[in-house]
Image (cartoon, rainbow, N blue to C red; front, side):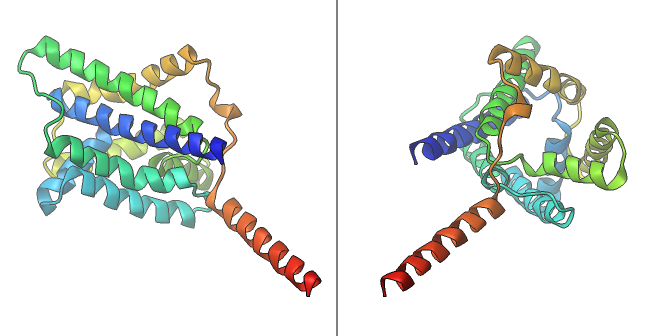
Length: 226
């Protein structure tokens, strides 16, 4: 139980840091990352918050992933809900300042990407499954037999275009985050000597089977005693 608890703490630290990184990139005011452009666009046309838009889109993607046969973990569900929840808390309470000086804005953008990379290390390393959007990329790659790079670029270009048409903010920061976040993630993984291939994920269906096994074992032991 202690090991499981530590993994859940790591998961939620990662999700909070991810939200914090997103807010840093938003408040840098240089242009949003593709998915955030999409969430902001939905927010503007519906009147809901960006966090609520993130949760709603995440839920739809989880359903799609399930239809594609991708396994869903507790980390997937937590990612879907809590990143949007933490995002709203940070933005509504104005936790992160906004700067007008362009140098400070670029520093904030770079810091945001680093925090996102650190968050990725935390929540993936917890071993409770990938986020909904990563799962969508994997599912479409399997279904179409296209390269991961093609699928990822196609998804991000699609949500970027849709978000822009709905009023999402695109700027130089959009291009920078689209190109540089991957390098920041790789840098953080290297610092912590973290190999994502060695992570053993635990999925919800495994827990269901485990719980069923415990139930049948207890039932069998009860019958033997009788």
